[in-house]
Image: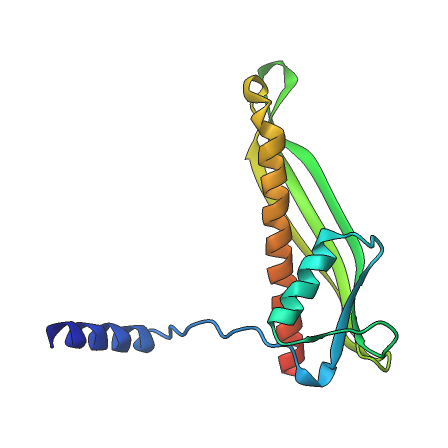
Length: 163
């Protein structure tokens, strides 16, 4: 009984402060089948976005049939030094991942206008432990790609809910 009372009080406190669980992402059903297109046929981001759209309820496009298209207009990854140590050696790098996209309906009308999303992460580079740095950079790239998928999906969800 005491545990039930504690759970009830915590629930009331959470509701009173405005907390609510994040709604699941849902793609508008009127979109019909959705295809993801990118200039790079083997883009990991395009593959991951197609999977995320399917998980969100979108029907995958069938070759040769009309479909809405999520176009990845630009996908760019860059890195730059952030800080230097004595002797002009780089101490920290920043990796930036930038994507521009738009969503067009099967009839060619723009459902979500061109948008740009940019994510960045920084990491410390240790010249003495340089063997681990490429692996760390690959992990950061994967993390940025997962973050980009989530960011694009949130943008699509918000824009489609506003329609």
